[in-house]
Length: 265
Length: 290
Image (tube, chains in turn brown, yellow):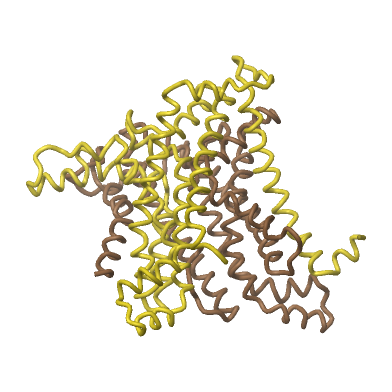
């Protein structure tokens, strides 16, 4: 019985996504049943849409920068988390994880006030990057905690006893061992940033990000099939990225010699 | 302490490493939230911000019925979404933890989390396609002859918002409950049954209490962020389904009244935090020692 419920639940989870390719290839400009026939013209429209190309380029730039900075901050926090405790450490690490449970609109509103009203800056891709790094860092820490906490500190000590400096011991011993976690963190941060809308809508400059552009399209019924085609590509891309991330996360756990017990969080 | 000796101790190195993420969160979270608090006590004077301290924004929120209405509706929607999501999620977490063989568990979790990582906007929009007048459910039911007229109670109202949000936050609820269930020592369940408890009473008296920390975490991780979502009510809610987040967004981006928007954001934030704290307090006996 429980198994049947689980299958029903998965159908509920996947129902909206399953509709995407159906309407992306449907030869009708209204997103409704009955279906009209097969076409690929919505996909070819994507290739000729230069506004979309600009939005995708912006989003890719933002997502790559976010992934790099969030993972760097994540490495610092996760490594500190696995090291000796000092007064206030739990509080500080808890504070850094806070954006995970904060409503995104609070992050958006507070950064908008600081950037526009207090500092008087123009919004740009960098304002979106700054906010995305803030919300991606907790995810990065959660992933990297798994990698760092399973390390045996004796290995780095052994390398230092054998004459390596602290930095080269880290680079030669620890870094390769946590590398799968780092790759996984980069991919997850990239995926979150690429898809994030609530904050980007507040902080985007004159060039919209891809979700902000999609938001604009959703108001025009004629554009909806194109959105379906774009969505199909995005879903396929996310699934590929996540599968790679999951592969690296598991490889990391295998390298650290621990049993796999859970998912990303 | 000199920097040289500071870095030779592991504590010192750990403290140094924690500086970059801490300073980043301080600069981009703590200080901006401080600015929001400050702004909520100022007022918008056409194009400029009047920086005299005043409670006008809060007075306006308290006396204008629409803000109270939106806030109550938002809290109702967040609360309902939380209950629905957690109730639907618990059996799944239980199933994966207790009935799926160990080597298949991460595959199940992976399957559960994938829909959550795919384009949020498009996922919300697709619920419109499912629930709409000539959407999947209505045309399906009409095709089968079960209904003659399209069902109207599932689009452009609060129900549609609740269904869509319950879908969007499903993995958030499943994962913490799953983690709590995984930590339960299985021999306790055997002991309980050896001592004469049935499977049901074992669940109620052993499994459920031990999984309470996960349940509480799931409730908080769904309840708090849902208050800040303006996409779902905008697309699904119609005129009668708008929430407080839509009003905050309107104040900031359309009405250009940042101080009032800041005050609304704070009122919403303080309300959810207060409810969350009461909830934690009510459940503190289950959380002790963790």
